[in-house]
Length: 347
Ligand code: DAH
Image 1 (tube, helix red, strand yellow):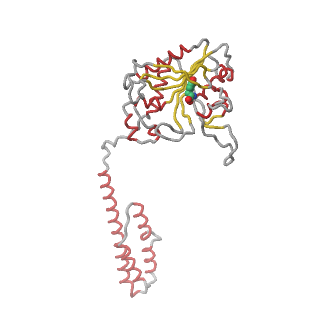
Image 2 (tube, helix red, strand yellow; image 1 turned 90 degrees about the horizontal axis):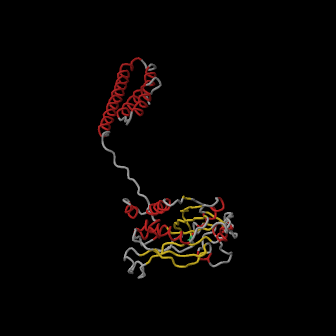
Image 3 (cartoon, protein in one colour; image 1 turned 30 degrees about the vertical axis):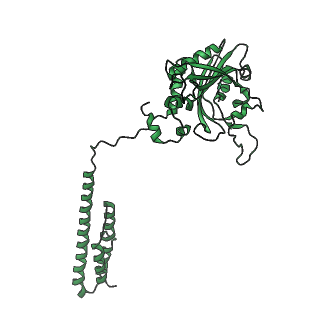
């Protein structure tokens, strides 16, 4: 291709040039007009052209240079205008959209309320691991190795080596009573603690059971602690939690780690104790297990059972939340459906 054709084809190229910002535009300028640019190269070629063609080609070349310069100037103007338009659209004085705040989870609300009520009578919070061992969850709490009480609290066991299923004593705790054993081994009486946390059970998931839920455990160890102290503390808690009219009753029960053991019911606040479908006609609803700490448990934790006695209790946070907020299906608590969670916004 001769110089003339080159000039003509570059002219068509230049007329179609596009750039959306200053950087792209500068790149075009360098490509065509800089010292090493393509048009400058054509001028260099022009020096070699025979004299009789110089007039025509010189004119063409000058046209090309002017055309390129004015195209680049036009693009520059376009870019400046579109930036201005964008700046006008961006209204810096506009009030921003409100940040969508989350709400507190109903289980957190209930857990905090339980802690708050007991902290007013001297209880502090203690925590322990969710991945536990047999000793702290069962052994030190007086569960004999083959005792059927273990079946009621079957849990999930953890493989020590990946893929190797050997019998293992590493497990997910089935109750927060395991924290009792840790606290009693590490602290000297008087002890007055609440142990909140998540627990696990080998259960089929349904509206009334789940493979994980939450508990708050209470433990009080001192000299001369009696069953009357336990009853008084639980009555105080129930009235604070469910209202001053609330009554309680203690029914004898069995737990390996307490002797005597009891289950506590509160009067049904839906029917005022007369009996309704919620309390299955009894006028009472069960809310927790409790009892006097078995001397075997005290001794296993290095506390002299002749000098000290104590009470313990354990309640399910979901259970209390069910009663307070009338949530019928346990699964709602862990599904993270904002339509459910939003309902607790004002609680
Ligand atoms: N750990 C028991 C459970 O998970 C609840 C419980 C009952 C805890 C009696 C206690 C207690 O501290 O004294 O079913």
